[in-house]
Length: 213
Image (cartoon, rainbow, N blue to C red; front, top):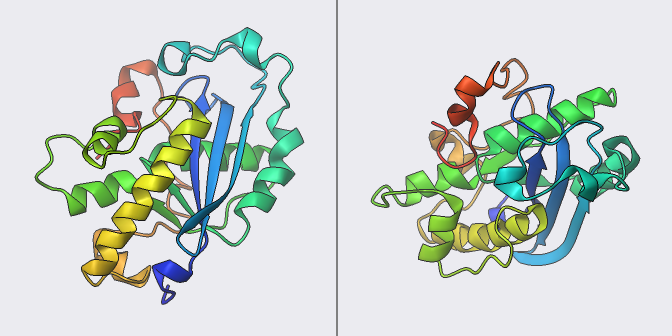
């Protein structure tokens, strides 16, 4: 917790999913690694969720696109290796980290990482902004997302957003993970262990990645 942000390894994660319930699955994952305040590596793959995709309207991923993709269990070791020792980041970490935990729990393991949320950081850094959606923030920061709502492109743009946010944090004296505690960050690996994803589609709005309270 006393480590400088500039000394941390971060992995920005974005997942696309078949739906929003706990029984839904990840159908695409994108990850971008940051070391010494520089983007150094990326990982992206479609994942066969072994169930029908009903969220196509949000990300454009259709069932036929994942038929030949690996199952999560086939790439879990690669994902675990990629994020080893890193602080994880997502835009609305509540959404992405829950699904990551559910997938790893299905493999008989779990996450043991701290996590930051660029949505929560944006609300603290920019209370004057009318919106804190990812697309709005990217526009304000003049960051281009080449393929919005696809995991790899979103993770890459979120990483560039975080690097600019980190610079602002450091300028304002928030140079360590511990300095973010008054803002309720970082989350530890137990932060969502007892929280269920909404029971039905009626509650879907509370689980969107952009404006969860």
